[in-house]
Length: 121
Picture 1 (tube, rainbow, N blue to C red):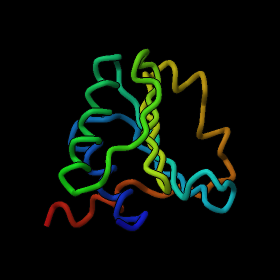
Picture 2: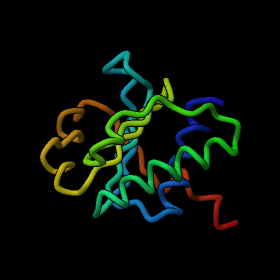
Picture 3: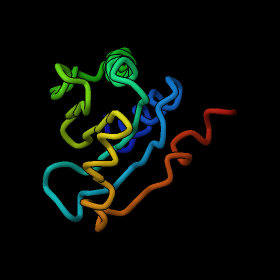
Picture 4: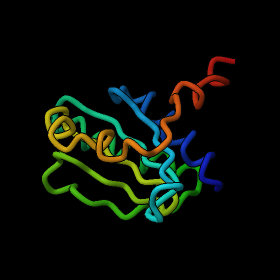
């Protein structure tokens, strides 16, 4: 699956399952770690767990191999590494503390709504 298709599937899963403040950062020009970072929040550790599980399950239905997952033990910040796309799901106050959007401010932000546009059709 191409990176943009992967981003679209992840954003749709996060949106469907009520993730908060979804952001997409095109980081490929500023790091070799990935092409895209997707950042989202939940209001509880249960929400972080649920969003992490939903993304993994929803992408599995599209035959995307399960990602490497970090942070599942504490659920303050989970990271799902799909290679070219890395998903960060934060507990609200943890996201504020680490402020990845500021840290990666040289990345190009993409409007997550663009990945949901044809969904209403």
